[in-house]
Image 1 (cartoon, one colour):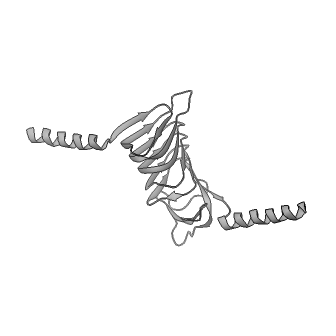
Image 2: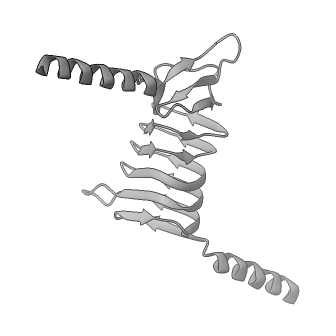
Image 3: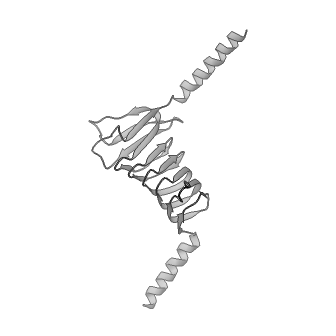
Length: 195
């Protein structure tokens, strides 16, 4: 019994030394570099919508509930779970696994997705990029493409037999070289018209 208590005390001290704790959020908050959490649960505080901005830090499990919003722009989340009309916004981040339930809307602009996206119920994921490649015969759950910034990506949808266009909405954005060309052409036309 004493050995068990000693082991428990050592484990407790190690987790506290790292600052890893659980956090239930009911009001607007920020998660920044140096913040470490085992679990973060984000809830609404009706009638207000809770918005959490994450620019750094480390979370093992992040759960977003009701119509709360996570603006995820930096840091690391091992597993993200979103329920009930939640919104997940991603930009230059790494999310190994995402579980999206009910009416969740996820908006992914770029980042590194090393594992899987699970879509349940009426959850939808909006993907912004170009050169989308989906081959149902080769790999029915795999979507390849390039993000807005030109980086390549591969997304795996694990819980479906194939990519579902009702739940995965692709937003084709112009590749960077095309945007530069259009801006340059606009400048030339403007200068010619001016003279």
